[in-house]
Amino acid sequence: MDACETGVHPMNFLPGENPDSPADWKPRLARAIVLLFVGVLFLAVRLPGIALRPVHTDEAINGYTVGKILEGEPFRYDPKDYHGPSFIALATLVARVGGAHSLAEMDVRVLRWSAVVSGLMALAFVPLWARSLGTPASLIFVVLLGLDPLSVYYGRYAIHETLFVSATAGFLACLPGMIRRKTTAWALGAGLCAGLMLATKETAVIPFVAAGVAAWTCLREKEGGRWKAAGVFLGAAVLVIVLAFTWGLQAPRGLVDLVLAYPGYFVRAGGAGHEKPFFYYSTVLLAGKSGWLLVGLAVVGGLHAWRSAPAGAARFLSVYALIVWLAYSAIPYKTPWLALGIWLPLALLAATALGARWNTHRAGTIVCIFVLLGFMGWDTRDLVFRNPVGERNPFAYSHTQGDIERLPKDLEKLSAPLGHTPRIAVVADDPWPLPWYLRKVPQVGYWRPGDPMPRADFLILDVGEANRLESQMGGWRPHIYGQRPGVLLLLYSPPTNEAVP
Image (cartoon, rainbow, N blue to C red; front, top):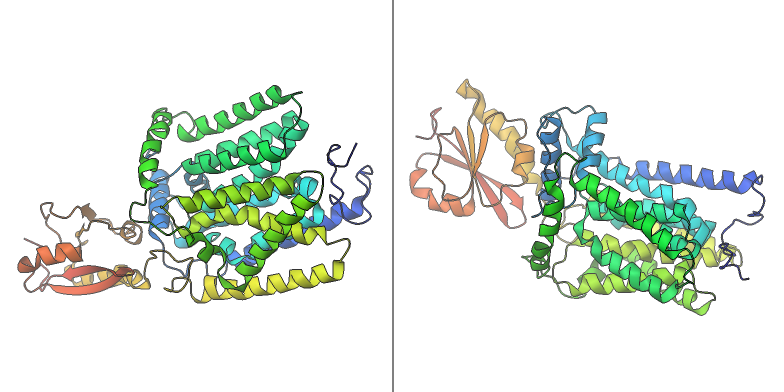
């Protein structure tokens, strides 16, 4: 019986570690120290300056939703644009722990802590990866997860992707164990993670299909125990999905809306204004020198998996990575954060390539690791901290301009002479992220272009509406703010303290 059939890969353990000797505490201590180091690295890289970057539209929508839940409004899953409810549930919990009780009490730090917590969740699956890829590879992977610029950039972004990646990491770690060993524990883990994936993003069907094809190709086993494991898997996944989309059984309509969401996603897949060429994700994944090196190592890891026998988790990852990359690339709708779904298996394969050489070429492997980490540190400094919203940053997409952060401060100054709480009317086709930035303003309303204009002390208009109302704005002073690249908003203040007639 070979090593793979026994469930013990030859690389599973650090030098000197005997899998049959649970009393051998030194390797366990070494893993614990490395994980502690990586946890500190996560926080040290993600927390500094976390509030400095302007809030992206998607972050603003999530923050606004969380704030309303804190204020007691019931949550209802919206199948149009807002993805699954699991990230909102986590962000709400993090906001409450952070001391926020309303939308006005939230700040950028509290909002983005949810992304940091989402990333830390991936560390829970390191022991599972150690059993299939080996301890060196699993520990190298979490270091890459902690320092890679793409991972760090969106690990400080209050959107669903980081939680989705952590759930996917758990699903991919448990699935081979479920198929090979057919035990309840592996099936339960895979099912819970699969349920969390779908409860985070409905597009989880893409990695599900990729994982199914990869498993059929690389992990086919005899029939024994399969149906029991499949039942546990499906039961766990359905449980998470039901609890999430019904918001703890409070809103059963959420399950119907989940089904209704998919026709809209098929339409949006055509682009919906986010059309990109087939090779778009290559420009994101190959950003900086570290991107080229990581993808190159992933290719080496994939080739090594097919040259060595028997088939195992690394070969499964190579097929999965290829299918996911091709599937996401073939869909016209593309945004840079979706590249995280491709980056995850590539990072695992890169770690496998380095881990495979750990015992035989340790000195060279250490040099390669430090070179990779050096490039990652350099790229992270430039892309995450120095130039997070620059036009040349491939991770910054339709990002909010720093100009918008002046608007609430200017409003406060301009409204001081009024002697009463200002009434503000926002008329714009897409006002986001203004609802977040004006969250502390008690009297603000939002109208669509062409709606009857209410009485207000200040008007905030997009360019189209400003042009339409130009003849009515005599004497009003415009203040111009960059909303997103190429998109402007105009704040109109009256010549006197009188409101709009």
